[in-house]
Length: 441
Image (cartoon, rainbow, N blue to C red; front, side, top):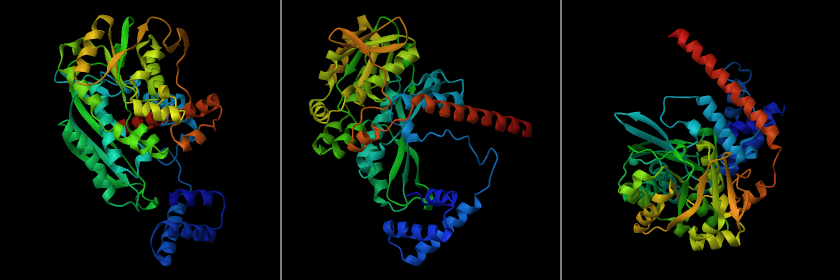
């Protein structure tokens, strides 16, 4: 519970301060093992701090509201709303000197230094793995290393960030770190730095864990999405999923499936590819994560300006059997959920060799589609007929709660207007503050 937001909302609603304090004390005592006098003093202090922030105005204290909540716009849910929000972030950052910038919506960014490409990326842990810190650390580390590998880079170091709410057990930090370093040591990539903080400091009650892991790599041959060309084919490996599939399994009553997600198949496949002569012929790579194959192929088509056709009949066999069985029982669309499979884009005449190399690492792989000229879009071939393959509003609902949330959707175009207005206001604020700083300096 965010006690600061609770008080801020109640004061804005004109509620009596004594009533706010009494109710907040009840909330505090329901979560924290403290005496009533401490809870009362704490509640009073929160109210005073919130009152001291009222009436602040100007660029440093206000922002233009979008009138759209994160959840209802699907931010973080890897669908249309999330992609739109990320493109606004790219607009605020603007065009930079990066070799691969955020405007290209790739798996990682790249800059050129010393004649080589330096690749950097960061991934947030799955929010629903808060009570399973080892799994959270393992899967987020594997995810960030995937993003380095698919840019054609060799990862050289990892960094982490861990935030635990005020009432969380300190052991969560250690278990999370153990998950990170299990992958780090297996792949011989050192964890070199990080940060450990509480979520919201004193203001958030509970034991929620969140955090991220980032990685840095070095490359000579970039395999960014923009290198996708008409005439290429798409090759995909078998996927057993990561944090998303583990979450679906835990919260839907299939805990035995979690172990299927604990593997290094993706990373070893990339290592094997990068050591082979076949690697030089690869145009682009990505991992099947953002909204599943629907989301990633759509983004690739937009970034490269090509039309991508996927054959549905070629995909099903590349979902790990236990995972596929679970998804079918839960009626979860495997095309719209993160499978953590490797997707390679290469010339048709290089496909067989790429597949042979990956299979030599013990990982299944075959062709699932092709790239052609035309309107930038993604389509799905079902029984020889083309169907729309664009992302849905959110990724496939993969937990009971998500299936409920998926039923509440506001008008998307109306929400987009508010989001766009807020992003433009942020751009203007950046320009104002930058201009002022340049005058001062």
